[in-house]
Length: 63
Image (cartoon, rainbow, N blue to C red; front, side, top):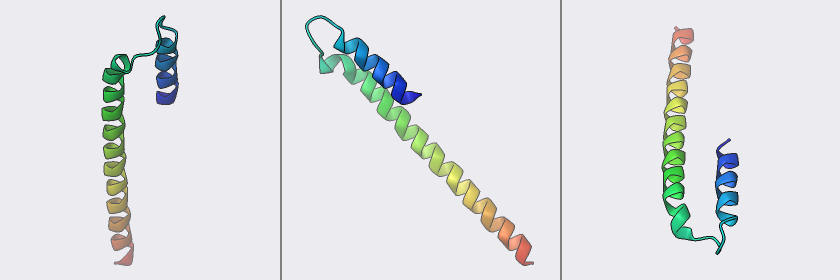
């Protein structure tokens, strides 16, 4: 869905008379980069929690 949003925004910029200006897209790209960074961080946190839960389960099964 994020990729669709990016494509939509860029298609809007392409249709602007006079051409595309990178200064128009810079704020959008900055927010999108922050979003992707936050999502990667959350995904890593989730994976860490899953790994810990697996280890805890394995320890309990070994008892």
